[in-house]
Image (cartoon, rainbow, N blue to C red; front, side):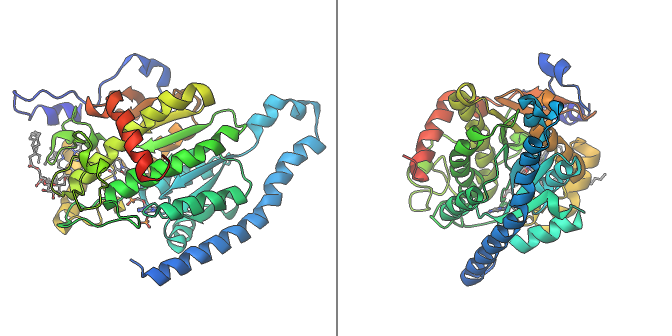
Length: 399
Ligand code: LMG
Ligand code: NDP
Ligand code: PMR
């Protein structure tokens, strides 16, 4: 495997487990800067547009459901049938580009999903949906800025007003600031990578869990996108700076730059902050699983979709990196995947019956077969997950 050859470059003193490790369950899963005022305006417009859109859609959706009752044939009358026949509704954060957009497209193409594209830039998202050929009835764009907890709450209210069920939530959006010398902060003053990627999603997932619980969809799922670079049991996870949450002292002290803007209390490093945020994403998924899977039946999952070296994630990296990174991943590590392929992978985690197990961190091998991957020691530390949960609850105002 390509990864093995990459790993063979490792000094013999470093022992790293390979990301492409299989475990027994593989057998079951063999499947193929706008100004403040502009911002406010965009928010208002998007909310208005959203509500307008929903008014047009609601009758369509509810007619669909009612029609089954009114024109019920004996086959359609079965409650089981009814459950499987309606379209699923999936909320995807950051669906305006990259992985989120590709996933929205993949789901829409099946004809079985209505995608709520939860995005900070309404017009960009609309254009993106059109550019990939999604048809109007398969998606709705709703405004969500994860770098503002108020916006998260507003999104949840707006979503509830549409009276659509919530069947799957995909926490996908992220920011990466590899070249930033100084931290920047969210509306509530948290360092922006952890504030957006982790805390914004933490609040969103906690609030929307109630909505997921109410859904009658046969397979309800909550997915938080993780990454290989947060896992120090891999080669990629050992490229400095490495993820490390330490004892969470920086997070506990508010992550606001006064004491520290890093979770472990250290000096600011944008690349580390991103990797730390991914560890938080993977820990949160497992904590959700432990706390709520049995009680709610919701499947909680995370994944590493492969290295999608061409996405907007690297927009702040130096031009030379952006030039060399895709060929490096394609020809040297062989970890590269296209946006389209990565979107299909995440779409599997959304809807494939064979990926319905809860608490799993999914990865794919070079034949695009999914497998349950192993997380690093830190990313699977249950005690840390609990502590992260409790500190995060305080920061987002849930405790
Ligand atoms: C940090 O630098 C920055 O400090 C930080 O601000 C942030 O930007 C962060 O992660 C982002 O990076 C990390 C530094 C660490 O990385 C580099 O400077 C290397 C840049 C490499 C970029 C990759 C693309 C370019 C690849 C060049 C290949 C040329 C060919 C391309 C085209 C081919 C077409 C056929 O990096 C290092 O310190 C490097 C050493 C990493 C050690 C990791 C420890 C694990 C052991 C690794 C074993 C060595 C493997 C070497 C493989 C090299 C392959 C090129
Ligand atoms: P992109 O930059 O293409 O997509 C990120 C999305 O997040 C964009 O739609 C962006 O919106 C959105 N976003 C950023 N900040 C906010 C915010 N404050 N509120 C709402 N949305 C926001 O990157 P990718 O597609 O690569 O990243 C998607 C996910 O995949 C991330 O979770 C990333 O960590 C993960 N991932 C990516 C890998 C890769 O190799 N690319 C590898 C492993 C994991 P906008 O369009 O407005 O900028
Ligand atoms: Mg990495 C098997 C090797 C492998 C894989 C799968 C990735 C994925 N990377 C690998 C190896 C290496 N990378 C090696 C050997 C190097 C040193 C030359 C290296 C460097 C590197 C940099 C500088 N890689 C990076 C960066 C980034 O800025 C990216 C990052 O860390 O963002 C946080 C990145 C990535 N490498 C990956 C993946 C998936 C990324 C994107 C980050 C992510 O979403 O996790």
